[in-house]
Length: 266
Image 1 (cartoon, rainbow, N blue to C red):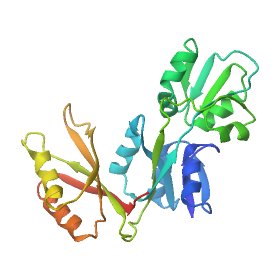
Image 2: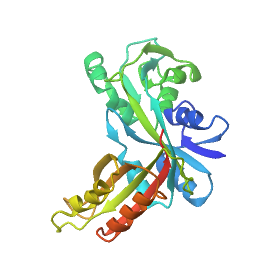
Image 3: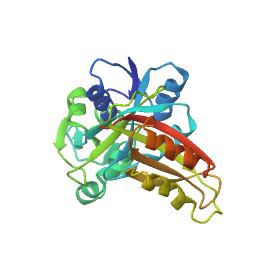
Image 4: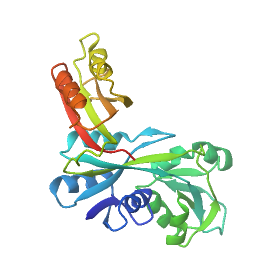
């Protein structure tokens, strides 16, 4: 099993992949699009990418890629995230580096403790740690494991803005797994802008069949202001009769319905 993760070594994507399958052969790539494009082409068996964070919400780029590419979510992994501030500890911290999501999850801590530091974004938390290894005035927001991997000191622990900081990762492949009886399905739905009650009519199909929705949110369609795709997570598998019936009904009401995955719940 060749699984693509965000690199270099030491990222939370790597941790999520090892939690899901400790025996997978990990391939480190530079960004989420590289990972999912490699899955679509068959170069990789699967890829592990973040879907949403309990503090900062959904990862927009990943949601857009799932809509655009011919791949499917085949599993999910919930990973507690504990950010640390890492550095060489030899001088005053003047620059703080990390992935944009990690910086956002530690926004209050950085504003309070390093108000004068320059904040720079990097491709991943481990990339930030690797850079902090080279310059004494730089510090990285990354995991404690990255400190060991890159020979850095942990300057501060648990710097995230909320104690219950969890990121939900998706394992993305090409095939939908069989039902387990404890599944989740993810959809993307596109509606006509000028039809009153369109979203209500879609949600009604699920409610009438007793299908529980666990998440619903909108993403810009890029067709114009106020035009959106709706992303919906629900309990159940697409092979379950009530789910099949609901999807058939909403397919007649929506301009587009794409099943992004049907997979065991974490």
